[in-house]
View (spheres, rainbow, N blue to C red):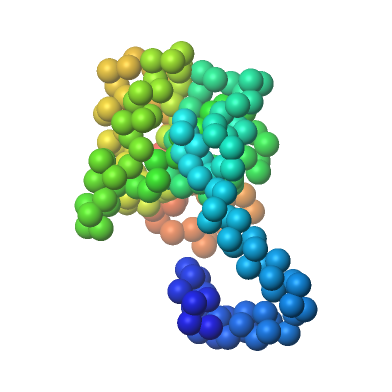
Length: 187
């Protein structure tokens, strides 16, 4: 229970439920779970090009010749990349920063994969999409990157922000409504 409780989003009660679940399942299922955890730690690494998680280097996305190699979408973490891939809408390349700028947490530009992103730009890149999270750290990171990318004379775009599909205006916070108005589009 103590080890499970160390995981993000797992509190003491959930850790207890998981521990008792593991005790109740057949030994082979528990050993399969342990083997899967061991495999992840031994086989999964970062892609040397985009810093996505992969078992093969470069990752499948970087190797895919059918993707738009003139566009790079910059995300904070590999799970952000996965979320975008699930939409089946984006067919370009990615670059995973490994976090966001956060001076209060001691995370500066040298702690992220920013230099590696800049190294990729002379390779026929026409557009960089900044898809950092819409929070203080993500916004600061996007602004910082925009300044760094300006001399490259490429298109730099930011993912739209605003109201979620299916949401109600009355329940949206003031910052979200402000962003939705700022980022409105013509019909």
